[in-house]
Length: 128
Image (cartoon, rainbow, N blue to C red):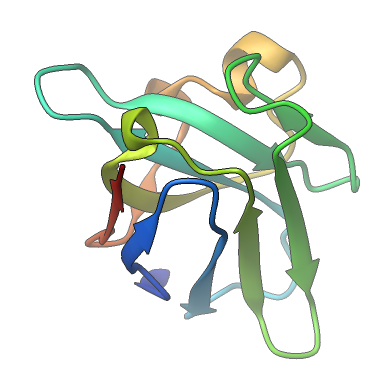
């Protein structure tokens, strides 16, 4: 069973940066996985932030392009999300997700319904 554990959240001033990590375990090493970061802003549905496809492609939501960088450390089995120039509207619970195989399109890669495995989330709070 795939398990995902997020870390790195916290409180940050507007304009600051934060780096989130997702530690993955329980993988079937015969299968390639796509992974992604999602967030739930208070009062809104969970939305995709960035994805790292099993073939190495990276995709970003329009709302974070240019401010966010997703990376994967295969040696440590971690997925990272570096977020810069944070604004109060980035305040959210951030979740790591994984699925087997490619997600194929930008729409699907950033769609929560495409992912089977989820972490518990880590809170990021940006104050002005």
